[in-house]
Length: 290
Image (tube, rainbow, N blue to C red; front, side, top):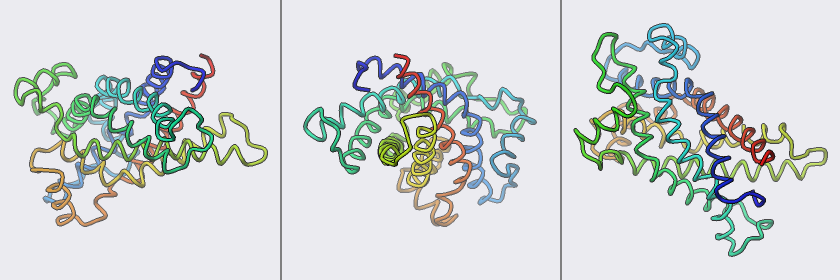
């Protein structure tokens, strides 16, 4: 990244994040449906989704293939802002954390701190797009024939502002910052560190295979650390019955147990693992082009 300007790094990062989003958003929709279904099942409603691929197949059969990309527009809005900022800010903030521009001696702790900061800044700006994305995805679980509240991404922004106020666009900001800052730290710091460790092993070079291994590692740690907060974030944005983040956590724990925070772990890893591999592979290649 040192050979690229901040603007160049931003656009490379934004492009890679948007490309990964297009490839993996069907898995993200399946993940959200499985998380929301868990709460409905606790209230006695029948479960119709079974597993990641089963959920994808059910959505495609009942709602059409296009439904698997529902929310792609705000998803791309989100990735352009969030993905572009969190990655392009990482190196400058990492340099700041060590008090200079020489990054050879950066510790894992300093990498984590830098990623926490950039994740928090980026998602604060991107929260409205995240909210609209989750709202549009959650609408898909309504029974066929039920009137939809939003006709599209722009209409969702307009409707939320009109009915709930501008501040409502930052609904769930607290858990969103917590989730995205921790996931960003898990992704960027682990990718950075795993890649560095792999390159120190004789025979490994800075190629696509190394990027693939580091991307998978980043996805695993992101899911392991971020799943509990991710579940709370999806429920807070998709349902208004919770008064606060703490209220959501307490009710989920009391009604469904601790394992509920890891509901959809495998589809979550399928989504984040593949997302990280695609994003980092694309990012590394686009950076080489520039």
